[in-house]
Image (cartoon, rainbow, N blue to C red; front, top):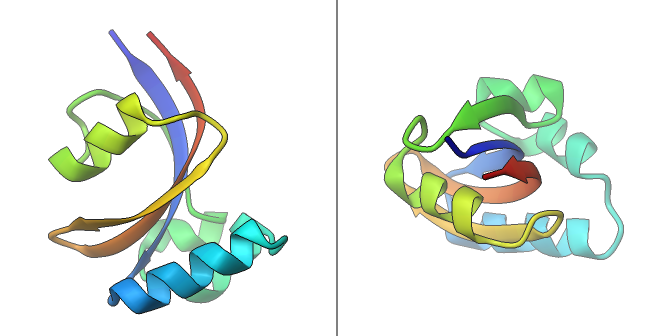
Length: 93
């Protein structure tokens, strides 16, 4: 079964998501941005969601984590919770 590790930042607006993604892509630390801006409790841990299997996250989130390139920052990804920036840190098939 596929497993992955990821971290994310959850915000209310697509524009905020885009702005934070640009900050990260231009050198800001993902964990620091997550701690300051993420509305998910995981923000306190720098957005780290730990390890999880396929199907444990909402569909839109799951799709990115299990198909997109590892080590890159992806988003905005819209889910029922808001807009996410996702960094896949590890994945095993």
